[in-house]
Image (tube, rainbow, N blue to C red; front, side, top):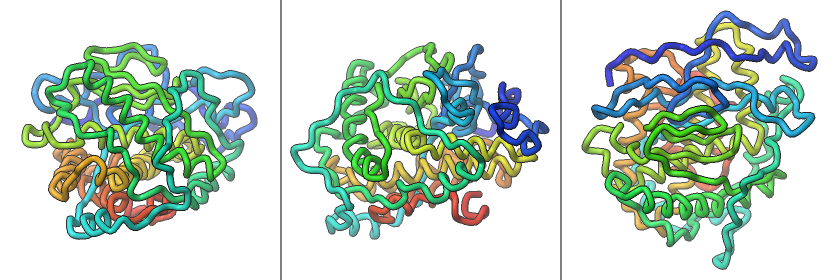
Length: 383
């Protein structure tokens, strides 16, 4: 995990200021976007993704986070912001075990829209509606900072008793696929109510496990990856993924679930317009360092949303305080500094301790989605 970061990709194929009335003078082209990787949004790419990091031995692993968007398929008059998205990511968390155990055992934070016990998951939506997109930079700024979803809360705890941890390291592809369907059902159970209360849709995304490079609407995914693809609004999970982690973490309970909780966090951002808005604001920055701040806000928010979901389902999934502690270790191992071996690196995903802190914020911060508003905190809190 000390290899240099993979090479940068070329700039976006389209620039905001060159499309449909966006102010061209605000668009800067002096730097390139980070390449795609684990924990990022994917967009259609004609070429195969670079292999990236070599972690855990034989498996290629790209740096978590970052964006390489290209225009997404359209169904009509979508705004230019609707053409760019950002996608998957890893997870993070700093755990205070006593606080977590107390929160989970108290049964507090029922949420504003508690989910009934007889709730039935919606069918997988293979033809979801277009993602919402703002029309101006002013609107984009408002969407990331004051989004109506921040006024909502989730139900804590939520009963997902069917979702028991799986041995993702040794499970078969069929077992992982079956588990992935239970996982998306549980994720929708927690998040659909708050998003609908905020005026958005939360369709249940199709989810697929793959065991070799796979062609998607976002291009060809590496054999080791996990992705929420914004072009087709689907989730992809590579069977060998646990092997990218240090050996002592590869069999961690809820590892697969935590990672996909983060990816679903990007789906939440996409369905609320936060993802497209942040990507637009990121692209108009004049330097890579400034753009990285926007990237980190997106990635760390997804970390926090993953923590909220884990907090909600931990009791019914039988997770112990020690299990949660290990998950925060997984999160910290995915920091930019940990993966690059450069303690002071300025990149797009956050340092290990920052990932831990935001995952822990979601894990211990209660039911209010505003807990995960990474767009109103000082830049130093998303370093």
